[in-house]
Length: 255
View 1: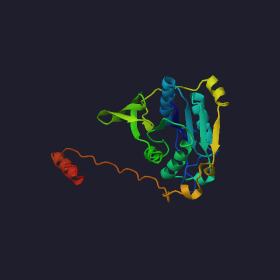
View 2 (view 1 turned 60 degrees about the vertical axis):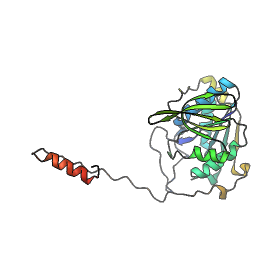
View 3 (view 1 turned 90 degrees about the vertical axis):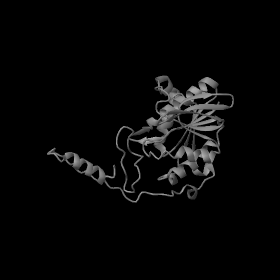
View 4 (view 1 turned 120 degrees about the vertical axis):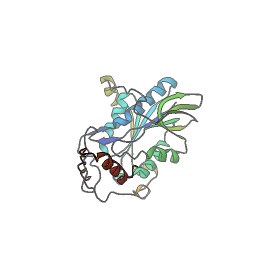
């Protein structure tokens, strides 16, 4: 069982990221680390290989500091890493990111690709589905529990009203919810061992891609503060409060 798990390096995981003059996130020269949302997927990958054997390969795309996210995943227990870094990838949108990650993943032997439901710096939630399409594999989303079979995988898919049971042949891509696993922490032994684990560093040319292949299809042209919420209306009951509330609800098209 060979599992590929996505790991993203994000700026200031516990605070508010900074925007540069080009309205892109400042990812270099600032505090950053592994996206906390990726940790349940990494744990799920480790549990799968502990059950069925095989290796966990962590794949990431980002600037040079993104190596920190890869190394943390390796210190937790992943076996090897892949980091794609290229100046042409600055400002890449979800489509470009999926294009690059799919090209890198196809260089690996994999039975399962695991990812977070969404990143905590972008929150698009669309990348895993695009990635599955490029890889030509089924996408099983919002997995809160998984069970490996003979060439298959079954998950419990979290929904607002409960869960659905979904089964798929392998290979497949699965997004893992935050509550699906209890991520383990890096140990001192794991941190030291991570320094010796192989990490392949790739550029776009190594993937057979050019800058034109990853040119963003969308961009941010400006950022403004959200308007402050207006003060609410206080209604004193002088006998007409009920009528005023009804009128207010009608104005809001609630009733």
